[in-house]
Length: 108
Length: 115
Image (cartoon, rainbow over the protein chains, first blue to last red):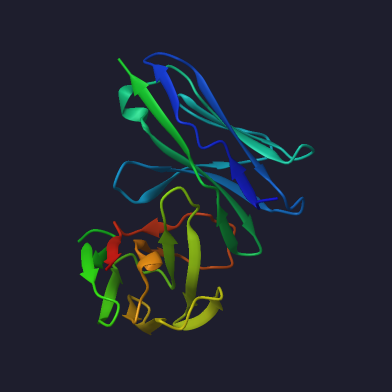
């Protein structure tokens, strides 16, 4: 089993749609969780951290489900500019492990 | 100055060439990283330097040789590479490797093609 697993997609959604991605992780002792965003031909950038109680930032909501060992990212009211690859990242004792990424395309 | 800059942005080299990738960070961070990003694969951590000391080397072939002369600069020396080494090489920096923060600041990457 991969350490961090994501559905690669692509997810194609119309503007205004709500879309959710999941990310599963294999190490139940993993400490911290993050979502990064990578635009086409650009570097990854931190989108948000995932707290045990959940984290909301505008249209984006990240949640952690420790018992089931997965994290989710929800995007509401999708914009064209949300088109990107979303990377799930798990941190264990200082080591960051990246998922493969989920490709999102938002169309008019 | 942007946070993390990488040069060159694009590099084409033959299998017998020797070249180097350069990374410079202007953020005052004390940890720097090299990652490899291949198509349809997760980012692979190659090397980590914390306070200029190499703290992680993920079984990377010896044809890749890192160098960290100070906390602001990181190099990746390349020699006798293989075509499968063609990828995007990303440099990143962070405040401190052992903290709870998961924020890495990446450079735009050096796209390497090995012929």
